[in-house]
Every structure is written in structure tokens, then in C-alpha cells.
Length: 177
Image (cartoon, rainbow, N blue to C red):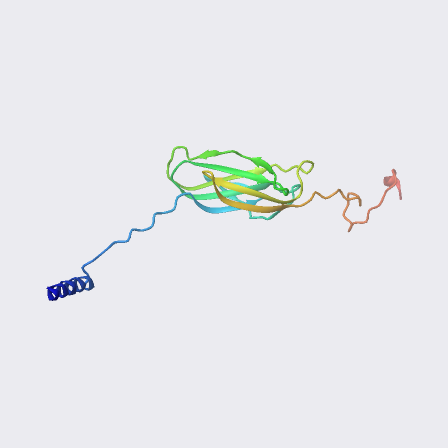
């Protein structure tokens, strides 16, 4: 009996070693709603059917720049809800966009681009390091910090550049010879 068990075990091991077993590995599914980029920029332009971000920035001068948070998602196959929350340097919630529905038809979209703008006012909002948090379907997908430069006081040197001599002319300077 022991001899028969040994022969049976040897046969099983021989079959296993000779390639009797096979298996197939399924490819991993393509991730949906994949975040391709999340960045701060000062401009967004239209590029065909999509939006294209300007150069990424970490510092903004509100007198000269808009303050935008740009999101690019890939492989969107279902309805999604996007949301931006903007926080001041004191960590107070300043703006909440609420949920904005995208792809309500639930079609396959290779790329989705979106952005939100912070309406920063120097008389109301402090300069310093701000934060924006971005959510897809209620899940935090990214948090970015950026700096807003303080508003500089107007120059007291006059309207001309310090490289150009500033002179006061008499009222009748045209008639002078």
C-alpha cells in the first residue's frame, strides 16, 4: 500500500513538473478617472475641444496674475463630481465650489480638463501661503499650496523710472529759448 502511494505521489509530481498545468494572467484594467495633472497656473487657453493650462506656478502677484487651479483627468468612463476648496493662510475655508457634475451622459472621455479661479481681493484676503484641495466624487485627489505676494504700496518716487531724470518744467516751457 505504501508503495502504491509513493508511485501515485511520484506520478503527480512528474505531471506537475512536465507542464500539465497552465494559467493565463489577465491584464490589469485601465484605471478610470486617472489624474494626469493638477497644477496652479495664471492662464488657461482653449486648445480645440479641451483647455490647456499655462505654465505651472507656485507664486502669484494678484495685481498681474489670475490664480487658477487646473485639473486634467484621463480615462473618464462615468459621471463624476468635481469640487475645489480654497483655504487662506489662516487655514480658513474661503471658497467652496460645491460639486460640479461632469460627463452626465456617462460616455467614454479620453481626457477631461477643468479649472477653478480664486477671486482674491487685497482689501479682503491676506497675502501668504494659500492651499487648494481638489476632490473627485468626494475623494481628495490632491492638495496644492501656493504663495500670494503682498500688494506693494505705490511708489513715492513719481511716475517715471528712476533711470530717467525727473524734472519739473515751468508752465511756459514751450516758449523758452
